[in-house]
Length: 155
Ligand SMILES: [Zn+2]
Image (cartoon, rainbow, N blue to C red; front, side, top):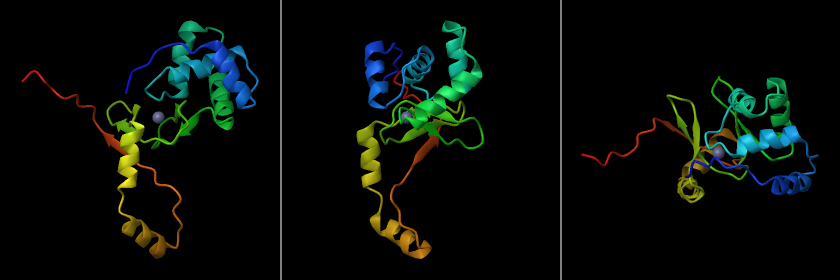
């Protein structure tokens, strides 16, 4: 899990947008780049704050609208949040999140670990839920909630 803060290559983003049939604009590039370079899964407001330092012409409404456009084009996902502002994620592959209760930020669980967790869910319980509630389960979503507690090595 690395804290990336690099700028995406513009040509790569032009290509990516084209693959998703999305017209390339400076603002879309700025918003996508700001989102993809944040590991914390920012809210629209946080992205707006970040962009207003670099791209003074962009409004909060534009950030919101652009995020919705990116979500519709499957270039980002909107993460449901318990009551507060939605957070956005430029990683659209299935992965699990860790939520920090103190700050509300989300971090990605490494894909292999998340997969191991999901693969080890007891199938008999899932089947029991299905038959008891008459529901066919396609996917399990798990969010891990807690506090960031870095291991201390100086004791
Ligand atoms: Zn994520």
